[in-house]
Length: 434
Ligand SMILES: NC(=O)c1ccc[n+]([C@@H]2O[C@H](COP(=O)([O-])OP(=O)(O)OC[C@H]3O[C@@H](n4cnc5c(N)ncnc54)[C@H](OP(=O)(O)O)[C@@H]3O)[C@@H](O)[C@H]2O)c1
Image (cartoon, rainbow, N blue to C red; front, side):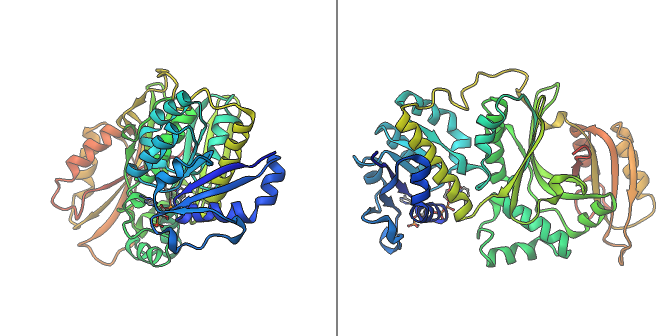
């Protein structure tokens, strides 16, 4: 049987990883498929400077992606460029030319995946996007196939390896975020502009895709409340530990009687929970279903080889579909709004909260803060204070019993106007039931 042919656009981290696996693992891949996967064209802006694996043989090299997506021999295009502008053009042109597509692009699929998928179905081609979320964890296959018979009630994830690396290093070494971040940048673990990672936007795109797959809703990034990790400090880990908790950037999508509550934010999670064991740059997704109950998926969230495996496995899946003549008929984004999974604002959620203060100490501070909490019907649970050298920048923590996010926001806003505060209070939800 003849080979299925592939064109790769983008030879950066993911493209080079995928290419290396296609070359090194070609024999196994063709045994598993019953036919070969052959790369016939590759593209990057600086393609002439790239060294391609010798085992690939003769391949068209070009800096113009159009030459790949219109190449008569290419059956599947892998878009591994990233961003939303050129990537969108690449996907649209590939689909218009009848090519099947594999993409690792979370940003694009989170913002307009449903439109792209609709176009792919109309064109009768196949589309796959496993590498777009959690690199090496095959979470799309899990949600679309593995546990698709279940009815998902909640999904929690550690979806950004860089921020998880930073938080777990801060926790281990009691170092401030800025120091760990610059070290991560020097080692190449974090981008020069770290905003997408530490402000939660990367995790938000991933959660939008996962929630769409898990709940069959058209979820967009705008439906998800996002807050990054910039305000977390070593003292927060100290207080969290006193409470037998730790702090992680958690992506959460939960069905409630009000609707679906979606957020990416730092949260206190019990030290005993399986999510707390996810250290360094690892990712994890925890899915809760009505019938199958808990399932947990763990692995490397990024990197050329783990993400390369996801791309190559998608290429294999699409190649099988091309051979068996069965393109996708139903988009994972195409469900009608089901009502019960309608996204609702995070302000309706009820949680216990951790409130951390830094104050210029004077008598009556706790009474003042407690008064504001009482005026919003919030019950105080505990007050914690670790020893501190100065009274002018004194940290302490108040935890409160479950209350609505709206009440906490109102209280924090009022507290922020108090003249003894060195900075606005830090409010983190406590995911005590995890
Ligand atoms: N990095 C990861 O571990 C990871 C994990 C999961 C998903 N992803 C996703 O995978 C995608 C690629 O990420 P990456 O880390 O591999 O990015 P990257 O290292 O920046 O590589 C991007 C590649 O695209 C090429 N490119 C950019 N604009 C182009 C254009 N107009 N025409 C032709 N080629 C162009 C670049 O060419 P030059 O090399 O010539 O500059 C480069 O080879 C993104 O969507 C990302 O979100 C990445």
